[in-house]
Image (cartoon, rainbow, N blue to C red; front, side):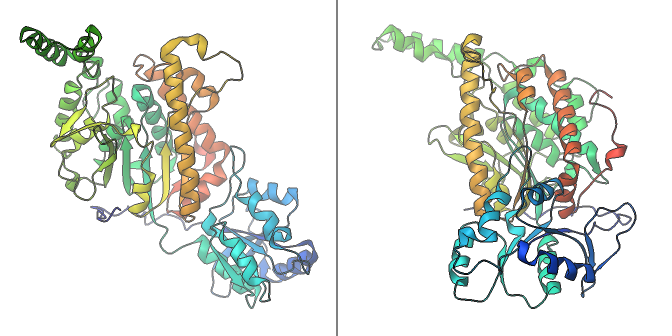
Length: 522
C-alpha cells in the first residue's frame, strides 16, 4: 500500500487571462422509438450556436451551466460520429427496452461493448463519464447488476426531467476536482531516452501557457528515471535535449565516456580473487565455473554516470533530495536478490539521494553494475515493472501520460527477426515480453479505476523500423529524437479534438492547430 502522500511544493500556475473552458460535449443515446420526441425536447431547450461553433444542441441548463448535446442512436453512423467528435460524458437512456428483453438485448447492452472498445482509430470515453438511465420496474435490479461489470460512472433511476438528466451528465464531465496530472516514463536504454525526449519536446511545444514541468508528479523507470529527475527539478525537455546532444544548456553536456565507462575495476577484483583462491587450493568444480566467477556482472561500471548525476543534482537551483524537489518524483527499481519492485521517493524511501536512486533504476544488467543502497543491491526497475501507473494513481493522479519506447518490431514477413542475429532476437524478445505485460496492466487499470485517463505515447510500426536493434545505440540519437518529435506532433494534430478535450478536463490547453508549424529540426 502507498500511504504517505507528498504535498506539492508549488501549486499549478493558473493564467488569469486564460479563457473559460469550452462547454462539455454530452452524447445522449436513445432508442429509435423515442428519438423524435427527445429531439423535439432538446430543440425546445436549446439556443442557436454561435457562428463557427460545432453542431449539436447548445443548451443552457436551469443552473446556468452550458453544454453541447449530441443526440445519437445505436446505428453504426452514430457510433462513428461519437468517435469522430470526442465526448466529455455519455448518457444511455435504457428506459425503453422491449418488454421481456434481457439486458444484452437492451440499448445499453448493445452499446456498452461498442463504446468501450478502443483502438488506434477509435477513442472510447472515460468509463467514469458514462451514465445509464434505467426505469423503475421489476427488471431494474437485474439490469443494474449487469451494468456493474462494466465499471462505469453510475446509474440514474428514472430522473424527473431532461434538464435533470443533462445536469448529472454535466457534473460528471466537469468534476470540481479533476485530480492530478502525472507523467510516467518507461525505460528503453539510450535509444529509448532520446525517443522520450522527442515526445516530451513535442508535447511541451503544443501546450499553451504551461509546460510539462507544471504537471503534478513524475515517475520514471530506467532511462525514464533520469529524465523524470530533471523534470521534477524544473528542467524543461529542450534543456535536457541540449545536454544530451552536447549543446550549451542549464544541464552539463553528456558524452559517450559518461555512459560507457568499462567495468575494469570489477574485472580486476574478480581475477585477483580467483587467483587467490587457486593459490590457496580452493579449486572450483570445473573451468567453466572458474570462468563464470571471473566474468563481471556488467560491461560498464556506471560510476561516471552516477558522478554526473550527483554533480548536476547538487547545482544551484537543483536538489538531490526527494524532500526538496519542485514536484514529487517516484523512481522504480528492482531489488536484485528478492526480485521485488521498489519505489524510491515515497514512504520510507525518501532519504536516498535522487542521483543514487536514478543510477539504481538505470542498472540494466548486463550493461551496468547493480547499485548498492544500504545493504541491498538494486538493478533496473524495468525487470519488474514497465511504468509505475499504480504509484501515480495512489498519489491522486487522474490523468496519466505515459511514454513507452519499448515496442517490438511488427512484421508479417517470416524470418525478419531471425535473420538479424542474436542481439536483435534478444531485444525483440525482451520488448515483446515488456509490451505484453504493459498492455495487460493498462487494461486492468482501466477496469479498476474508471475515473482515470491514460494517454500512451509509443513508437508506431513505422517508427520501430528505425529504432530496431540494440537499445544502447548512441550514434542515432538525433534521428530518433526528431522522429519521435514529428510523429508525436502528427498524432496529436490528427486527433486534436480528443487530446484537447482530455487536457481541457484537467485544466490544460493545447495551442490552436493552425499555429503549429515546423518539424523537430525547425
